[in-house]
Length: 473
Image 1: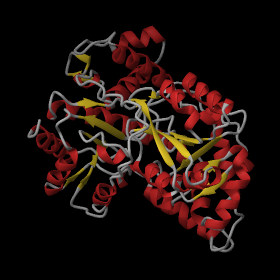
Image 2: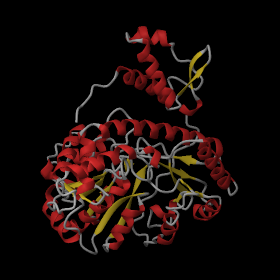
Image 3: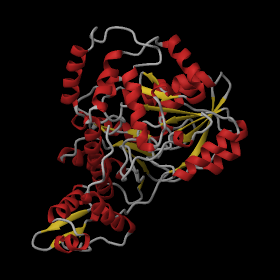
Image 4: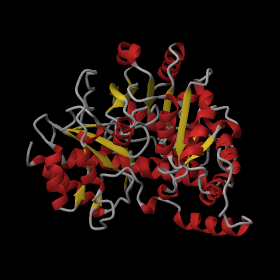
């Protein structure tokens, strides 16, 4: 792995993008000419053209023949942000398992547009390159990858992940990591290691429904902590119930489904608060590499000096969901995690871990991520534009800074569980908001996956979904 200097065109594009998003350059404003920017920054014409092409690919600017470049309408939001929920720890749990099952039962239907599941479309993944790496790996391994490996996990993969942690000042070594069968398996092992039935877990709300199901299956009491759609966990709300909590499980970087990003200072405050109270933090950093900004945001693990943060990751959202390759840096709980893994799985499959390690080690992963992030950001802007065009004016929409899901909120009388049945009849699937909580809320919300190949049919299906919502607003 090598750390490369940021290209000049990226820096110029970032400066212009900041002015657009801040409103300094407004809708319809003409950008400085290519020649003037060339002289202003003392760079080549090709560098400026690359910068403009980058902004155009994100739908932030548009070219007008014989006139120049202008700020496009996609660059400005018209809809507001979703609401922040109230802290209500006394509410009786009301799982929505039937609704979860209904959504997942459409997974293999190729006739349905899958806005519902948090899985990247096949066109977004480097499948051909992975297959080539897979074949080469089978030939390279003396046993073809059929044998057991140490319980802690594949050494090559752990070493490669440790190298990657330099990008966010993770300071990890290969011995700090344990491999798992995906991020959810990592979270499950962490919870078993540090809790017992009757303990209380704090999770953000709304939250990925898998986290809810794991917590309840282990007999844990759940307190849902309000989360801001931009800055994430509301720390003041957490402080109010901290005396009741035995463990926390949060997503600081691009939460699912809000896409929020906790500021660095908030992450440090969170880790300091939990360290002082000896409360372990299970950190789900599944989307951490899918940032839209210039650099990868640090996880909470980067601020962990006492070893209370259990940092969980995976390549399920970035490379190969079906490989089920994940990991955890469990800090002071490492030996408990290793013993737990020994009881559950003994060993994780060697072959796919070696494939991922090779793909990461030789630079193809870094190249894929850069291309993937650009596609996701462009898609995010396109989805937001289409939603503002086709959905009711009363719609509220999240402003994710990474990941690939959008959270939509409608007027309170709208029931997205009912709308789901109507949408499925038109071969459109989304995730109703009710499945992202144990409490009776988010009935008027939905989550959309935008990690799909953008085309005319996708735009048309968004339009049809918007018409379904408009019919009841």
